[in-house]
Structures are given as structure tokens and as C-alpha cells.
Amino acid sequence: MEEKPRRLDPATDRAAAAQLLDCLPDEVGYCPRCQGLTHRYGHGAQIICAACRAAEAAPPA
Ligand SMILES: [Zn+2]
Image 1 (cartoon, helix red, strand yellow):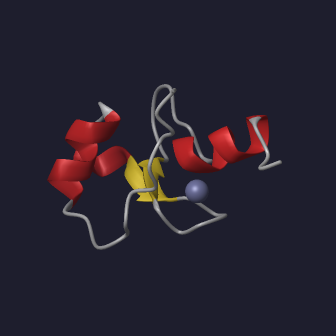
Image 2 (cartoon, rainbow, N blue to C red):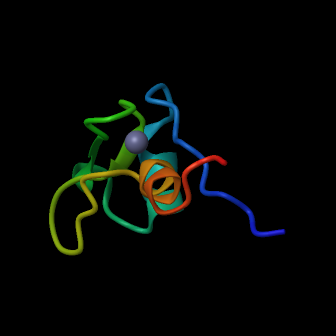
């Protein structure tokens, strides 16, 4: 089974979140849908977090 991307809790340390997201701490921001942390700014930004995008691509049956 494929592992679904997990939402990053907004309480997550920014440096740790940046490592998980493979971006800089300054580029970490809140997803407008779930308020989880995502690579929000800068090059290759993904405003909608991975968890929300996965939910959109494969809605629950
Ligand atoms: Zn989200």
C-alpha cells in the first residue's frame, strides 16, 4: 500500500519541518486548507500541503 503524505502539525519546529519538506525554514508556511506546515514560499513552493493535495487526488471512497 502506498503511504499517504502526512499533514505537518503547525506546532512542528520550523527547522525540522524544513528538513521534511526539503526547503529552507524561511520558506515554510501554513497550508490554507488545513493550517499544517508546507513549503509555502520561494522556489518550487507548494501552497497546498502534500496531505491536502493527496486528498484531492484520491478522495476517500
Ligand atoms: Zn493542507
